Image 1 (tube, helix red, strand yellow):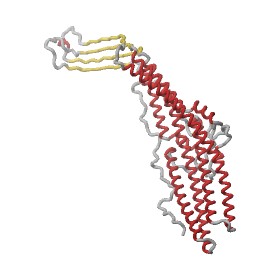
Image 2: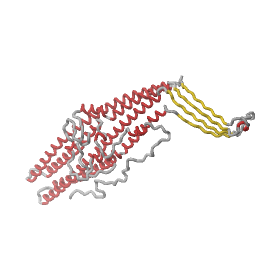
Image 3: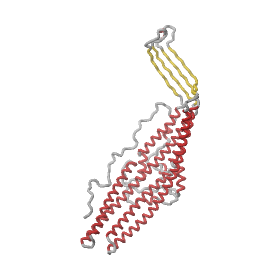
Length: 491
């Protein structure tokens, strides 16, 4: 499935048809550009990837409990005070020892620990997918917010120009006695309100640009209308079915429940005997000081021992039973969390589908309202010219048209964001689903394969360096004029 492809659900609606109609230069940013940059450098996403790599290591940590343990010891001793009866007591010694312990049986502790660790790796992979969807949803929302607020600023700016023209016309007609002072005051008040609304719209655009900077990593340039969304479902039931099958939050909850089951086995292993094989070797050199260095007395001792050791728990104060019960309770908690996640996913899918459909209907209604208000304004102006309508009627008609156009712009934004949220709820808002090809996609399994068989104690990776970049150096560009006095209402 490719982002902006030709696949659509049975709704039969292409969201490309509801994007904002704005002229866009050739150098405009696209939604794909924004998603690709966020995918590569959003700190929430890059941090979650680092967390997954850390979780990958838990498998190696668990496996290490079943591998041999080798240790060595070296010593140098000076015997500064000796017993009066110890005629053979040495003055000094140099020694060393080595021990190898090989676990043979640990009651299933290692096996269950590895299984639990692998399940938690699966949980973190699903959580990474969920984070991808959340970040992409935030990017889409910020992208559409900037487009919406830019359009609303343009609408309000045009409205101010229209009202300035209206005010000048009212003043001219007042000078010739065609209108009253009240008519002029109404035009002045409406213009002052329009200028205030323009400042509010500019402030909203600034907020949206800052949010875009936060999630994408750069300020937006001119933004291209977004492409159509692929694979939208034809019904609420279809959305729920796809969400239950693919939603990463639910997948993470299932993996957490699986890990909790293995944790019970880990706790139960504490009741079982443990068997290990061992071998030790010792070397001591008395440096010619044993028995005063007498002839025939060996100054070097060497010993070696091999054997088996069994640790059989008999009574541990009830701790193993408590840990088993604790693990069982946590398994119950994980089961309930899985059910809660499923409920949340079902609700999320249904709500997103309902919102998407509702906003499509709002678009249709708003488009009809815009068309009707355009005709109404044209008729009101014509009727004013022949004296059957007054200035306030025209001002109200202009305001109604502005309101309906603003509602249409907002509805288009809301429908697109709701559609993408629906994709995210269905687990179809990851980079692989959207066909992002701005670079190689992050492989969550690659690091696991890389570290899976590494058992060398001195093995490590290079010190981590920042992946995401700070936005502090980005210039602060405001849509609201700075150090510009607010113009007073026309006199």
